[in-house]
Image 1 (cartoon, rainbow, N blue to C red):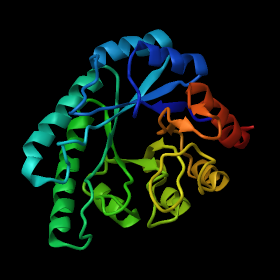
Image 2: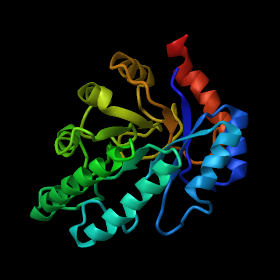
Image 3: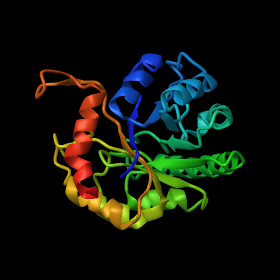
Length: 265
């Protein structure tokens, strides 16, 4: 079965969190980075906690506050910020980096949006080459709405600039295509996931089973294409009206046993 992971999105990343992951049986973590709220510890210190508790830091999510991959006006700043992350994190044993190719552009067919797409391709090519120097990869995340990377065609265009680029499949962000079509299109290019549910209207980041995704079909399609990366939840410790409390790490393992495990019996 896939290695079970959980993003640190909307969580305080400290030793207690590693303890909670380990106690529940969550074996992988994605560190979510922000320019506005830096992580309290260094990558090297997180590596020590990773080794201590047996929780692999399987990926780092690039910051996307000011550092906008598609914004030419901050190109040099973004390149410096992200290459610094790649170098420091890779030297601490993190070798997957999840990238947003660009935030929303209201006018989806505007000349300005096409310019942003061109800038994103230039940036991703440079990042892919730099990451390769550290035996690391950039995984371009599927994004919703008018974001850069919003459908099969656009992800294909982004990946086309460099064969080293990979894909992060965020199943809660797919609106313009069928998720199974997306999985079959990119196959082995998919190296990690963001797992959560939604209502096909807006991204929700709900626990799987609370929305409309056909999980049986999605999982079988991942198996069909030979996906071997993590099953990595991107759901916060939010309040659950069903449970009458906030989610905790054990709830994700319960969800694995309900949604994922039956496909691997």
